[in-house]
Length: 185
Image (cartoon, rainbow, N blue to C red; front, side):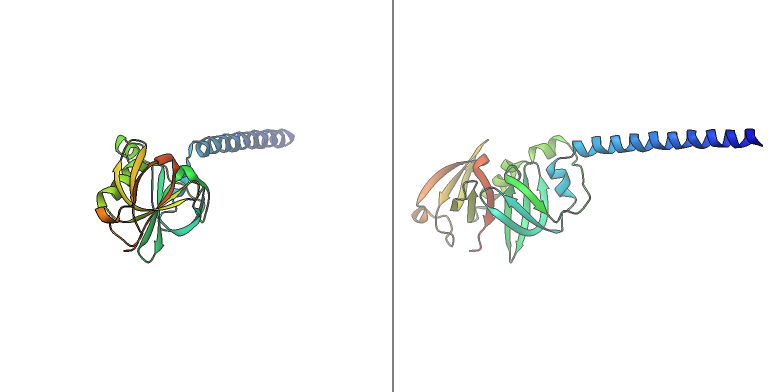
């Protein structure tokens, strides 16, 4: 009988050590996987949910997270207003929950960066409010988008881009853009 208890005790110790080893390996792999996530991955799982985004220059922005791309996120502020946020200027986000979603890292998804999103706005020719990382606010319409800059035809917020309404054309570095908000005309 003593031998049976001894073997049972040894078997229980072995099982406990195996369970501890497995738990340690799972924790290590989990830390490694979390270490590979980007801010965009963390935000992607919150698409469709209300969030509060703090970013340099634009301060606090709130709205429903509509989309997340390579270097940008899109918020719906309600009443037909959307704001495109440069992910590089984001310092904090509240309301994302516990989940994360990794991006499909394809050649196409890598090209859908901030330039791509800004080019779409330039193509639409809609009046915009451009918030710089310095907190300066410009209004106008994007004329052209280069590889690292955008040209903004400055005009009053309620106006469309017309030759007589343009006060100046300003070249702005993409890295200086905190947020781009659509303006209701």
